[in-house]
Length: 113
Length: 111
Image 1 (spheres, rainbow over the protein chains, first blue to last red):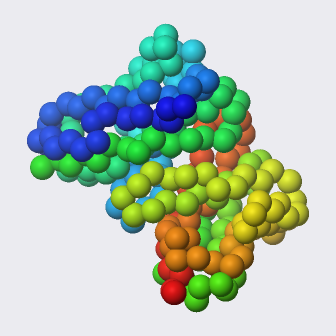
Image 2: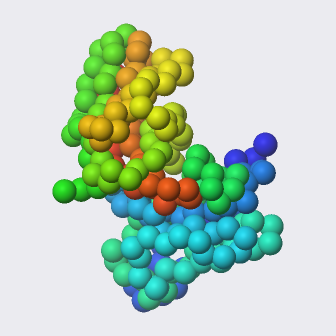
């Protein structure tokens, strides 16, 4: 049973560029959330997708956007990258929108130079 | 005041000892509480969830919740070197996955 998978594992981008990160949820899960984890800090909630719609959003600017596909996989897009966007981006999935137990993927390490 | 605070680390305990990790939260409306373990360079792994006051045990792990004191803890009995990791406390006010995480406590179990 495949867990949550994310791609790519590492990425280097230049300030001002745009990036797309991808996530496939654990089998049987239909809800995906994205988190940003800066070095030495706990993850910060970006947003949650369920039934292809953004259901909840944390305190992140509109440069951060997402999408969920009919097969429940999801993308995180970040526009106009800033140096401060360098972080580990984590995807988590759960069985339903109301499901609170979340399982994380291995993350994508984004470095903005 | 930060929303979720954890005891500052690193915390070092000898192998076989009990490790005690503490977490306090500011939102009295919080409903669900989680402990995640994160090895260096890896993603968080769910260890325990707890929703009502009292203790919840799972193997060597015991989570304790006191909503009146806005306090949740994790005890690790018979600590092993493989338990060395950062432990993250996460709190959720309602349904969904908008967890608020603490900064984590780094635990080192010394052989």
